Length: 152
Image (cartoon, rainbow, N blue to C red; front, top):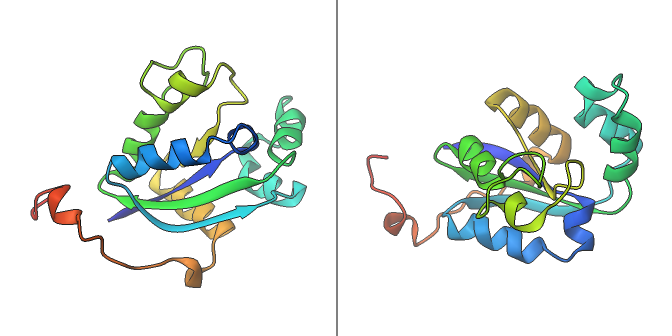
């Protein structure tokens, strides 16, 4: 089973959309295996967005991501990285399709509610930044047999 990191960004937390976003992931059948509310520090921001630190937009990105708490979530599921990114929609909320999280709730490129890992490598790196190994919960959902076939 694949895992990914999802961050509900400060705009999501401040707009009180945590429950709405979580319910969409749960309704899709994705499995929450770790979750916590935390304040991103400038140091953590630099680690998370290492590939952007030297770019001109990074200072405003750091200011935004450290401005209020985020909710870090580890989701598990079949093709969860692709599934979550499809659910989010285009990065720019103004360009995101209706029915996607950003299409329904965002009208900004930067304040786009949610971050999600874009590959297995970034998912592992990002999960390691936000969670210790003992913070993951391994449990079975009783509804799993009703969400997908045994051979999937």
